[in-house]
Image 1 (cartoon, rainbow, N blue to C red):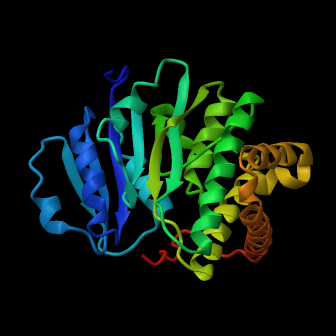
Image 2 (cartoon, helix red, strand yellow):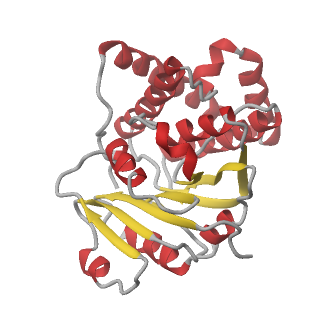
Image 3 (tube, one colour):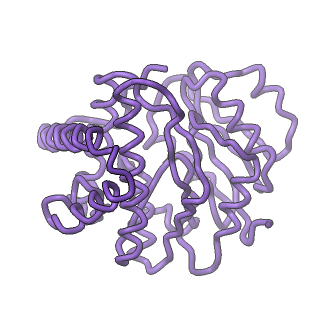
Amino acid sequence: MGPKMNYEIVIFSYDDSDLLKGVLNSALHSNARRITLIGGGKLPYDYIFGIKDDRFQFIKQNSRLGKPKSVIEAISIVREDVVAMVSGDILIDNDDILDYLASKFSEDTGVVFARIEPIKDTGLFNKIFRVLWIVNDYQIRYKLSKGLPAHAGEILFVRKELLFGYKGEINEDAFFCNIAYKMGYKIKYSNEVKIRCIPPRNLNDYLNQRRRINYGHWELKLEGNDPYSLSTISLANIRHSFNILLFVIKDDPNVLPSLILLIFMEGLSSLLARIDLWLGREYGIWRLISR
């Protein structure tokens, strides 16, 4: 199935080493009109400079600018009707996924995104992270069924006209999905498509990552763009949160121990994120997780 609307791909990558090769291969395999890589640090430069495809361009960052500034740079060069914003540190198991997601776009669509799952690994934090994404899957489906905005990152297809209000918010995926919702466009979630991500491997990495993401959620809520994440709706609408968690437990009661730890970690990271906002902490450049 070919894409219904012309689209281009922008890949964001910093210090992703050889992990980036798989993402680039999938992009080059796609029918995207343009493919832009924005990034720097430890990347497979021999591979990058060896790409012979007229659609491809590389915008090298000599120092790390952070994701928000990179997104602003990407917005300034977008030409096509739709842009796929892709993280360079993910695993795409099927090279046809990008064209498949693009094919979901129609005239009433604002954003399209896929289901995210962590790679299979051992250890406590992998279990917690895996349950986090199970909860996220239920949360997305529940919110969309209730007519609320939902979001996910890693790969996000966005209609071009939604891009230009972005000012550097930490969670750009939640921002664009919320703008699509406000403008009356459909938010489409392809949970049959799974993208794999690299989970945090220790307490420090996990807490820092969730703290930053929850910071971004609260930042949007204060702007009047509530992303309706569990961290922002848990107090305002306990029923929504309870229903989502109940669905997860009914589906698999064995997740309960990890779910209890997850709730504690989310509560702690959300509290720390609120303190960071109050103190005016800057999250434009965040600490990369260990791999």
